[in-house]
Image (cartoon, rainbow, N blue to C red; front, side, top):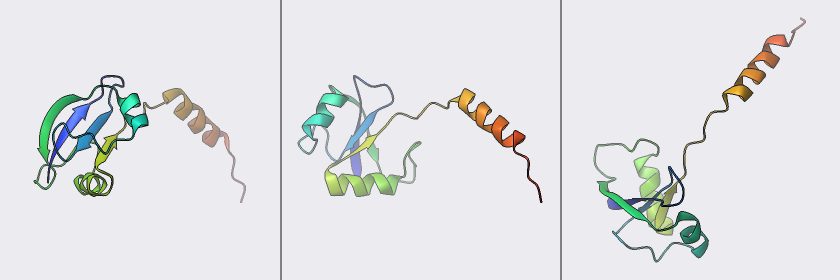
Length: 97
């Protein structure tokens, strides 16, 4: 399956996958508003041997077939301070057997 990939003009790291280039009829109005003007990135063959970086090709195909689009959200930035605090808490936990 060939799909068109667009990036968001409003949100860094947000990408939209649709079956046909410039076909946005299936997008809900709220998503259109949040996404902003789609900026074309490329055509991509989901059935090809090349995997996507942040998503599973089959999952993307399934979503496009079911709802007409697939929305890739930006990666969540790691909160290194929270990770450090959590690891320190677990280090202080004493196990008595």
